[in-house]
Image (cartoon, rainbow, N blue to C red; front, side, top):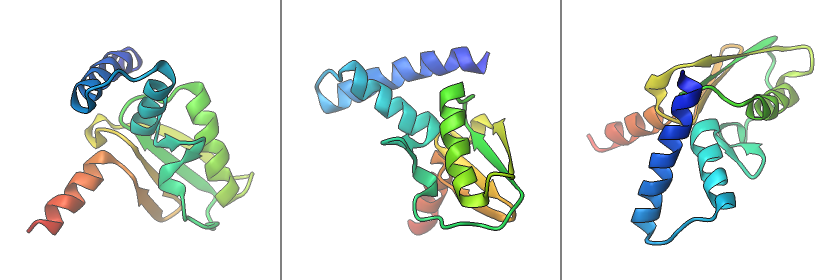
Length: 127
């Protein structure tokens, strides 16, 4: 059910983005925006993992707001394994409360690239 919802949310988000910027986005740009928002992927790289060096851990958990496609899961898994080693286990979980982006747990290290986390950081800095 959440997978079906992703398309509807995506269509609404693209319509809102086009309204805000005052121009129509081509299909390629729409796809890139949705990948970045839901899967945290920009230019074929997992945004939240940029700057994260290798980590010693035998497992990782990737949390997304909506289910990732098989292609997105493979890309994220490849990026995570490049930091942990090819024998690590990677699991995926959906948590709609993060709104967008990803949270990646690499062993005992948590890298929060979620929209909810970014909003919380902004809220804390405004206090």
